Image (cartoon, rainbow over all chains, first blue to last red; front, side, top):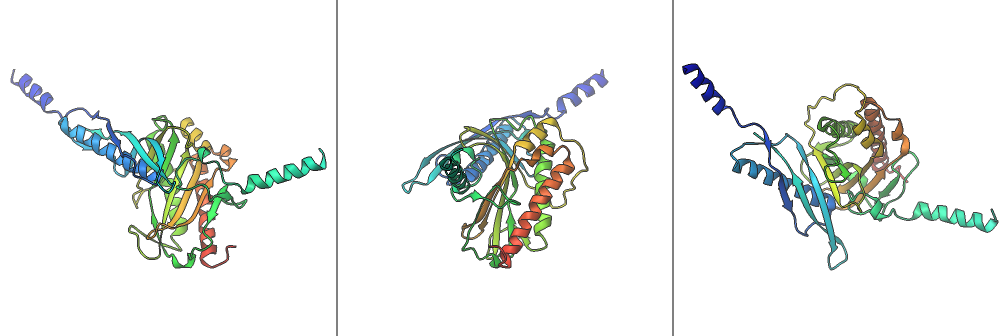
Length: 96
Length: 218
């Protein structure tokens, strides 16, 4: 009986299985470079994903040095006719 | 063909060589494609060089992480993440090792610092969504040995272009930019082919920069 209790306690204390919580972001119109706009949007989306992981009781485990995600860019022009970008991104960091 | 037809064909060919590329056909990785023109035969397909740049004034490089772009949401998912990492890795190491004899690598902008941004892209501005992968290569990263490319990885490599720009790290002034999408990538099958291709490209870049610094580039 004691063995079963120990086993049950061990099972309960096993860390949560790795999960993924997608994060989203919207930079608003504010970038003259699509590249910089996408990079910022993905960074914000990764932060959002990490925050959702923490909110669910997990610990975010982003892969060291890696930044990845989707980027949907819209553009308009400023008063001098230069393109200004807005980027929406979805990204996921590992959560344990 | 009549003489007039030949003249028209010649004029069209010249126009095709001198007009800027259609921005919609480009990825958007570079900030401005309108300055690009047909590049030298041995170099980038499309290139721009700032004629007023003081190339001899740059002795340091701020090398930003290599970025991979592909059109379509989650379009990079079919490529193993280790392969994406390795592509960025191989490219970064090839460029760095070719430029290191001539430049000191730094991590902050400052006087004499040139910012280098490079991308491996298979995307068009006109496509709504992009998938982006960026990898900061650790300094002691070991590049693995040779192996056949996975089919999805090879399909991407064959279709991809190399895009890059050099700017003054302090002022942001554009010094040079280029897009290289030569067709010889069809022959790429293994990681050593990829490595050789990156090394050839990096060697060409290092050579052009050396010529520019010594005033031999015309």
